[in-house]
Image (cartoon, rainbow, N blue to C red):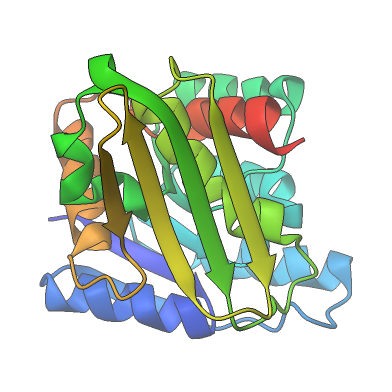
Length: 237
């Protein structure tokens, strides 16, 4: 049976609830990362991981310390699921990829909107251009730009599904009315819109099932940190 340790606060609670509802063995540890001394923060993370028997750690904390936290988690032989955005260059990412490989561990990045059912309906051969919009009424607490925080979802969708389409626009912002929409314009002048502003699909649940299947098959997950690094370098820097 898969077992998880979730590290985070508000969003960590959401993830932990989803895991529990899927009857997964899961525990959440809440950490104060807002005003924490970095050395003490990493020491606390080390203590938390060393005392856990979970097989996978789900990081729902700000991404700036992912590299150091990852080294700690890998040291204790655990897989990792990261919350986006991934903000590290290819060299830094490759270091972690090698550590995962040497230790026969696996990782994933939670780009949940890749699991929207409507994305399966798009015929890329007839696509002319795409307009992406992701706006939020709430400003992030973590001092991450809307391009990174919100745009990473859109960039992941484009890289995974529509990278051959070079005519596209991505618009993101904070402090506007919530809007999550993708408009596909076809050569026949038709338009297809995916509005997932009030999404009710079990997207994270689908990612969990997909990730666990990869673990069972001892295969790298398709939306791993290598994928996320490409998304970051191609669209978000």
